[in-house]
Amino acid sequence: MVGVVLAALAGTAFLAWPRARIAATDDALARVVLPGFAGRVTTIDVRSQSGRRVPVRLSRGRLWPLRKLAVGERLTVLVTVRRPGWAAWLVGHSARRTFTIETPSARLLGSWMQVKPGAPVTARFDMPVTRVSLGGAPPRRLISPRAVVSLGRIARGSHSAGGMKVAAAARSWERLPAPVWVSWFPERPYLQLLAEPSPGTTLAPGGQLTLAFSSSIADVLGARRPRLSPAIAGHWRLLDAHTLAFRPSGLGFGLGAKVHIVLPRAAHLAGRAGARLTRAFDWQVANGSTLRLQQLLAQLGYLPLGWLPAAEVPASPQAQLAAALSPPRGQFAWRYDNTPAELRAIWRAGQPNEITRGAVMMFQDTHHLSVDALVGPRVWQALISDVIAHKVRTVGYSYVYVHRSVPQSLNLWHNGNVILRSPGNTGVPAAPTQLGTFPVFEHIPVGTMSGTNPNGSRYRDPGIRYISYFNHGEAIHAFNRTSFGTPQSLGCVELPLASAAKVWPYTPIGTLVTVED
View (tube, rainbow, N blue to C red):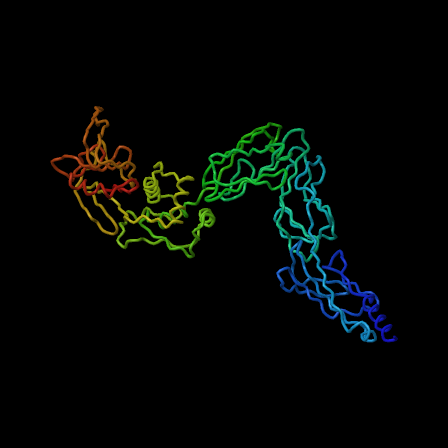
């Protein structure tokens, strides 16, 4: 009977014996509470949801993580307590308890606000925070935790609108979460718009366009969305009740493009003087660099030079867009050892030159684009698409140089060899063939050539064969003459029929023609 009573007492003591527990604290991960006679903590094991061990230390009853933790991270805490020796026979030598805790997550109470003139702009959180990052700056620790944080701005009349990225953590040992865009507007009776980047400024080709309104998106747009032109692949998404963002897909907004947005409802652009409301806004997309243009043209076989990058640019739209704005390092090299000196003298890496201009025109013609030597969104898109698809031009490189000194001649150079030397006629003294280097801009097998003679009369010659226009009305073409090698034309380079027939296939649009003495 006595044994039964003792057993019952022991069981009651085991169940009622003081046990360790976990409590919240203002600064540490948690506080370990040990009531009287509970014993002492021997080990604490903290694990993430994936089972990974989280290093911690226990100091004065407070549990501190030894590495940064994410906000809102769920953790499992296993506490082992060694009980007093005199009670071990009754309640056991040790006890283990398992707890689940979650790191605090400070939430912004509003990502937009209307501010009275002269008032400070602040961000409000649902709990005090200890670390903040404002506008993408490195995080800083506050002197004391606070739920209202100044953004360092004062509302000043109509120019008080603005926006800023804000990130905050409640504990010093937490990693900052992804920043939230906070917008503020002056108090006004009409709709206001805060756009990032600001209309009229440069827009990154693959960047995000953000529109924050002083009224909710539901009130301003309903189910509609702003109209973009030109039409751009991508999607609109709601960042919050007042903020809408557009992110382009593929090759972005288009290098060098002008982006135009029309809103369903007129708004005042925050920060702009006056109270004029408008529905239309414009941005200029950053253009690619001349150096990157040359790198791509060389890589695709449109230049007499090759391009060897120090490191390969990944074949993705995002990487190629970044390289267009910030070209990678590397080296150009002439593809042929005996490249004519006239051609070598023209080349300038990273600077506009006739070799680059001719290559652009050839690329435009090959891709059925307008041949104007202007590098805009469609040219960049085609260039980058060809690079990603490894679509390389393989027909080689041709170059024509003409000597005006008697005996006059034309020389056709292709892929490292002079494949034709022919006598030819250039312009008479009253209508000389202009010196310089020019790209072919029109290439027709047979046509009518017309113009004005030096005496003012008009001429019209139908049936001219193998015409390659390279400078205004000057062209390489076949012409029936009794002799060749002296000035006889009205500015053109005339060739015997057989020579013109051989030259013509090698002078597509973009081929360079140099005229020299």
